[in-house]
Image (cartoon, rainbow, N blue to C red; front, side):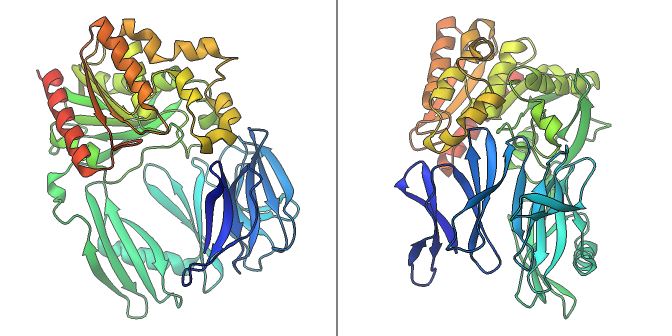
Amino acid sequence: MLTAASWRNPQVFDPFRLNIVTGEMKQLAENPGNIQGWMMDHDGKLRVAIAIVDGVNTQILYRDKETDKFKPVLTTNFKETVSPVFFTFDNKNVYAISNLGRDKAVVCEFDIANGKEIKTLYENPSYDVSGLNYSKKRKVLTTADYESSKMERYFFDEETKKIYDRVQKEVGDLNVNIPWATKAEDKFIVRVYSDRSLGAYYIYDKTEDKLTKIADIGPWLKEDELARMNPIEYKSRDGLTIQGYLTLPNGYTMETAKNLPLVVNPHGGPWARDSWGFNPEVQFLANRGYAVLQMNFRGSTGYGRKFWENSFKQWGLSMQDDVSDGLKWLVDKGIADPKRVAIYGGSYGGYATLMGIVKDPDQYAAAVDYVGVSNMFTFMNTIPPYWKPMLDMFHEMVGDPKKDSALLASVSPVFHVDKIKTPLFIAQGANDPRVNKAESDQMVEALKKKGVVVEYMVKDNEGHGFHNEENRFDLYRAMEKFLGEHLKK
């Protein structure tokens, strides 16, 4: 297998071929310091490298044989990308996901030796294509993946579509994924799931046309006791369509929900997205009687380049407005009680929590910041070593501490604690490499000086987010108590 290790330099990962039987590792190339990814052909030969150059440009490098030197074949600004997925079956060209010269990412065939697109194979008018799959046995493309309100796929191959349709017919409304097959492609591992279930694994025997359950995942979870995750969309104040999800306490529908306590839950990243499926945090909050609003604010991935670029240098500004506009939409519909609203998020979501109670101090009755950024300057100065090659890109997307100092100061919550009056709970890992503990420390210190109620939980054996179960239990017990105190009638 191909693997990477940073033994030579902690900031640089070199590629190795690992013999999984003997443990022998052979270095295949030396990373000059800017390579972020590697790709093999179907014969297991390392032939493609992806680099970040000049901090903001992405470059594809190629070699015909492993004895050749890598040569650059295409350089693009990081806003335009061609992402090779795997080689064509003759190992000559590659299949790639590209947004070159367009808004939405598409599947294309790409002349890797000359750095040129040959033809578009599939494009969706509303969403980026996010994945591409193929049959190893039959050597044909099978599906292209994209995410609307749920994961969806385009079928290149009728045989694959028949298998999916056959399984879907038996499992009903559950989402279906078929990630693995035998070499003969006569038996398939099937994964099914929903918003109210972790789902199950099945084996589908194509020869016998038989679907057999292997195991339920989380069988102790009862679907009829859990809440539905409703896809929603609303308009931002400047006219963007914002998609997301509203989870209501069990027993409520979009038509019957009125005047409910609400937890606004912006996602982390921020260049990521919330997705439909089982979310234990959301189910926990809904079980305690709260409606939960998740929104894919501008910058969330999967909606095209323009939607993503609309987030550049907009932390705390229009990105924050998208969060507030979702809350206003629910209040105007009568679903949310405006006097019983909390905001909770982790990482960037933690930052959005802090900015939420800075910009809209009268809107929130409680706030929970989980490993969130509070000071844009100290955050930039503590970027982990493995992020260094992308720092210039980060400056363009978020702001340069020198050139954009006024902007970053205006959207750093720690400098605006005078506006905060919302009771706040902060949770932080002491060993967090992404959002250092100092981000939370300085926020707590500033708030205490002002006399704002702030509870602070620090776990010494945690990094960016709590991964030890006992710490998670502590966090959720404390959150439940905190929200109960401040969102009660």
